[in-house]
Image (tube, rainbow, N blue to C red; front, side, top):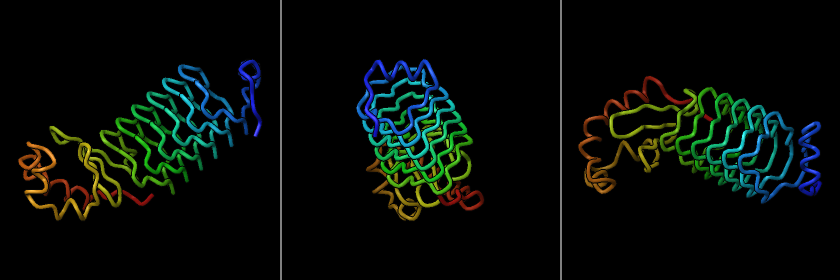
Length: 206
């Protein structure tokens, strides 16, 4: 994997923007404009990409494990097969991004925008989907007064609580009450509606 100096990085950015296969692990790229860049197979593990513009970036098979992508613009980015394990994608814009086969295990997707994102065969196990805007297929989002309900084929996230659909169905009043002081009243009002919604409009498998 190619190592770069900061000067070499700037030279490439001023030229063809081809950083495929480069080792940028741990780099501070906060607020950089990296739109249309080629980062195929690049190593960005632990990189700081806060507020970075990666619109239309080519990140196929890139390693973004543990990368900080808060408020990052990944609109129309190609992240097919990318490693996003434990990546921090809070408030990230993933509108129309290609995440086919991407590994989002344990990723933080709080308030992320996933509208029209392509998530076929992506791994969303353990991902925090709190208040995320789903793509209407693998991830579906609905607002019910106090809390946003986000669900996949197998799980439901309500606020910070993420459990299997079956667990939510079987929680006792006491268990729900312990989640939040106002949770039980809300749950009794919306429980049947939520499960009916999942029945008539289930999320597809990922």
